[in-house]
Amino acid sequence: QVQLQESGPGLVKPSATLSLTCTVSGGPISRYYWSWIRQSPGKGLEWIAYIYYSGTTKYNPSVESRATVSVDTSENHFTLNLKSVTVADTATYYCARWAFISGAFDIWGQGTMVTVSS
Amino acid sequence: QSALTQPASVSGSPGQSITISCSGSSTDVGNSNYVSWYQHHPDRAPKVIIYDVSNRPSGVSNRFSGSKSGNTASLTISGLQAEDEADYYCTSYTTSRTVIFGGGTKLIVL
Image (cartoon, rainbow over all chains, first blue to last red):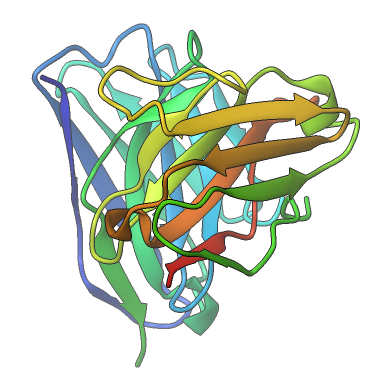
């Protein structure tokens, strides 16, 4: 059974870079797209980006200039770097598997809360 | 990209049916079979309940059904149960190869 687990700091200072890792266990990272999704307090879900195991990426235009997603197939994990963060980036960040065959995020991590504050 | 439009909240009594709409455009819902719906309980990970507009993943109750007409997708929940109270989100793949979420709908079971 494939499981995802987010990891990273829970507190990031304004203007710094937020870095999160999603570790994939129970199955290979290959042949799937992997995504980052967030939910700010009191708001809805927002797709951030996806990456194919080969390294192909696509970003939400709202964060494209600040976000970078990368994948490490040898370590079976993928990462999100979001630079120049502000309080508006405070959110619960989820990683999820995007299954193109079903057109859906079929497996999700439990989410990790990141607060941007000095 | 702007979020797909969903009602902020819907409500229904146990046993009743409710429908949640998800309005988009010709660049997303209207031009994609990759429309999915998610159930999100507080402090839990979202769970896919409908994919490819109208398909249910294994293990999801047949009380949940999805459809699409033009630029609007719909989720219907029949035989409402207390455990259905949650937030529901639609998503669509877009012609720009991005993914867009709806704003979310809070379902209240009276």
